Image 1 (tube, rainbow, N blue to C red):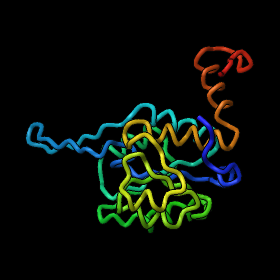
Image 2: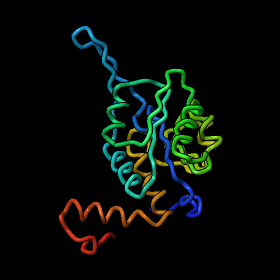
Image 3: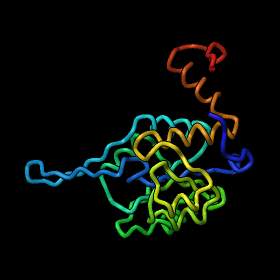
Length: 193
């Protein structure tokens, strides 16, 4: 996939922020009652997890900012070893992101954010690299510098990771290291097309 992100901008990015519903998930929420207790389930895409892994491997910090509070999000964030999680049931996403960035000493200009719907608009208007998933609403697509083809919950984060790391000149290297590590091979033995 050819890089569509300006390499200089890609290299300035230190943090990648992600919305959850409609970005890391398909936006569907499964609610149910099991033994008298309410449960909420979300579907996550394994390819997105690999994209997060690759971004973290090159030193990017990956964070989640969501307008819902969910145990599912906490579990997925822990599994992916995310660098920050903000769940705000009032959907005050921009102040939450600013707090996470202040803790890391990172500016909004050094931040990419992937969103899909109106609650993400405040953040996308001020970050250095606003990104829209393939199924984003028009208002989000209009402010995005990068528009992904894949919809949220179906590999959009993986697609973005490849674009960003390709623009930074790091994609092939991180994939080769991963394959070598999982294959007990030397990185020089891994040939990528």
